[in-house]
Length: 275
Image 1 (tube, rainbow, N blue to C red):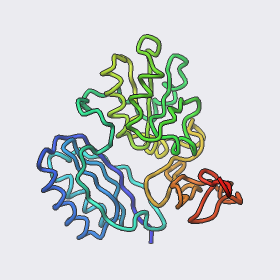
Image 2 (cartoon, one colour; image 1 turned 180 degrees about the vertical axis):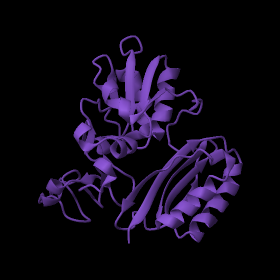
Image 3 (cartoon, helix red, strand yellow; image 1 turned 90 degrees about the horizontal axis):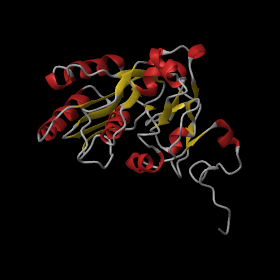
Image 4 (cartoon, one colour; image 1 turned 30 degrees about the vertical axis):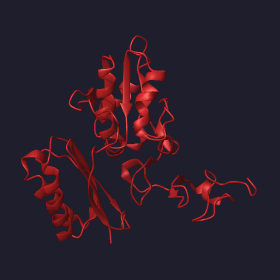
């Protein structure tokens, strides 16, 4: 069976309505036999769902009947095996954890389409920043992009404070997996006085889906938060697996390493005996 996989998000005020919406979405997804995760918070919705294409389509169509989600733009791809083992619909304080309660994600930077992205990031006056975490960046990124070396997205404001300066870095272009982290990261930079802030519309997934491999400036694979672990050009499943001990993606070379013992260790978490 081939599974259709849809990722989506939207910042929209839900307030106390998130509780009722959780019950409705749980019922809807169960009726359509979908698996995956949906996060709901007062600031909006963030989800990845998988299932049979027709069932997933019906669920998304029904979700869009809600005026708050009428313009939802899911990114769709496929998987040969179920990318999730169950369904979860959770209530959270944020749909992507950033730890800046006074930040308004409505004051974002300038969206840049995949077709215009290459020209932007090859401009020598533009600083290109990968807003994802270290383990994600380790398996793929855009050529020349800065790696903030964060362990979690909540660390990004500290990176900005330490490494970026509005007077020095006048043009900044950012990207993330599906676009949601850049909504908050770009809004944060604007709040800190950075004037020319750009971010890749729809994220890496949109770029890999839209840009032919021969024109792509992407190097490696893109980490995804489901059983596929990574995808490549055209959103085709990647070659990486997952270390069940530490959660780090492992390449084919990693899996051939003697330090890789399925379920126990990988080259990223292996500890020498006696240490």
